[in-house]
Length: 79
Image (cartoon, rainbow, N blue to C red; front, side):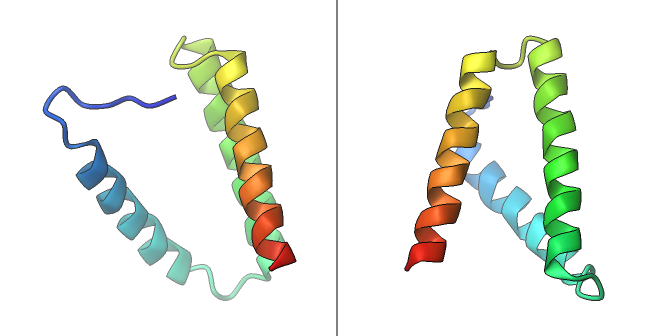
């Protein structure tokens, strides 16, 4: 599920995207965490569905992504 640019800047693109998302998340502080998490889940589901529909990734890719997300989220919560 990685769309790596031909010029090898995937890492810098990821960092830039994460910075933008972090900045945006700061604007959502007025909402409870559960509202933000649920809204992000809905948006992520739509994005993943669009990627499957446009052959940007396979269903197996999404299953692996979701499993990794669950692993990361739950292992952080258990710490």
